[in-house]
Image 1 (tube, rainbow, N blue to C red):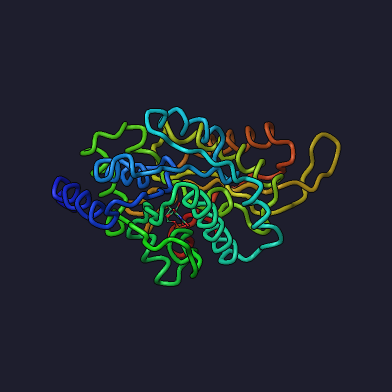
Image 2 (cartoon, rainbow, N blue to C red):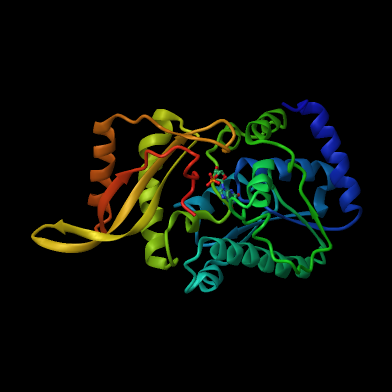
Amino acid sequence: MVNTEKFITKSIAGIKTAAGDDKVVMALSGGVDSSVCAALAARAIGDNLIPIYIDTGLMRKGETERIRTLFNHIHLQVVDAADEFLASLKGITDPEEKRKAIGERFIRVFEREARKVGAKCLLQGTIYPDRIESEGGIKSHHNVGGMPLHMEFTKVIEPICDLYKDEVREVAGALGLPKEIQHRMPFPGPGLAVRIIGEITKEKVDIIREANWIVEDELVEKYRPWQCFAALLGLGTGVKGDNRIHGWIVAIRAVNSRDGMTADPLDIPFEHLVKIGSRITADIPRVARVVYDITAKPPATIEYE
Ligand code: XMP
């Protein structure tokens, strides 16, 4: 575990040195990693920090409004890039290609915004496990292996790239960030895209966003898991009313973990699982089947792609 106060002092000095007098754009998603980075960078470089939230269209229900409310005290720019992201993902089915397309799109949007204000530096909330998984060939996290080779940015600053998630949460506490941010479940940068098998379409994103909302509503408060969400697996046969339908199969994923490197499935009472399944198929007519993922990490990963 890091010495939190020492870490804060050191990283503020590090950001100051790295940025100099330059303007710095940063990716603020509203999760604990990027919020900690924003708090550190604001102390280090003040108004030279330009925090940007990109609405990729792959975010959870109500997320963009939540971010606007949470960060209305700083000059957060909200960029609607949903159509762009969807267009970049069109026709792609391979998980690694998807991650690379998303990583590249993020950078292109940030470059565009950076050009407008003359910023040359990008600051992002990469943490240690993102690097290990990308470098170890497990998967390209959007902000590491998923980044394009050629970028207009001359410098990328990653103040918390040596920290594990629980350490980031400690730093968040020491910085006085709201509890809601400090303890929020992790949500991956590529968003709902890594919870959809196969090509990303608007219809699939809309379905999984709704199912995800239900899963979080049923599980977060009650069990406080490390992470829980819904994933879209594919199409299968079902019956609704008197009709056979070709409907979507949704998986519920809920895990406990210490650092995201390994994970165990959550022990949810069977009746509760059945209730969640019924709620999902009732509220989302195109879903015909709901399954519970009982796999640990390893051999599975937490996300689906
Ligand atoms: P996996 O699926 O690798 O997930 O077992 C481990 C943790 O990392 C999160 N995750 C990501 N976070 N960009 C991120 O910012 C990514 O590309 C990414 N992929 C996975 C995942 O939600 C879990 O908490």
